[in-house]
Image 1 (cartoon, helix red, strand yellow):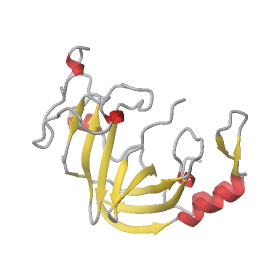
Image 2: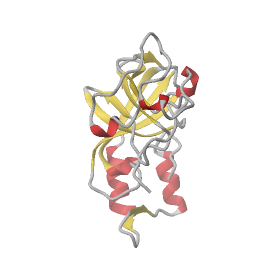
Image 3: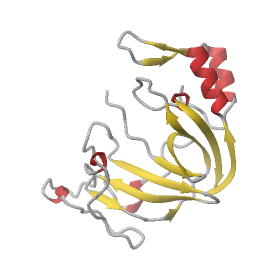
Image 4: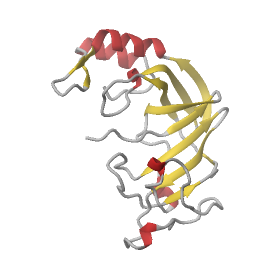
Length: 196
């Protein structure tokens, strides 16, 4: 399985990967008339987002593979206008050019409530996704109706997991092998209910 693209969240003037949250997604493209489809194996959901948070959470930029119902139509930006922004072709890195619609500086305030786990400085571990423990710096953000309530550094938990519970399987992939009581202390350490 190919490692999946992660969303980015700008926090304290730095880019972090969104590792987990209390909801599957912070933003739902279908709520804005988009019909994402899988365009590459590294993004099965068909879209990628860049969020920003200071006092409020907002969707800053959006890349989508929008299915307009015909393969020829899907070769060019074909999505609906969203909040006054028309989609365009991405001029970003090659991995983002696979999306047919790019919405730059869309700046939609989000009403998300829950917790978000973000991380940066990913260690060079061979993993299929980016769980929080692959990052050197980890924060848990608590958000209420889009407003940032708290930001807690959880980097020590990532380090503890790496030291105590990480191994490799026969294919060389990193695996997380805690026992039941270990999972309890870990999930109790976060507001977010982790998918461990």
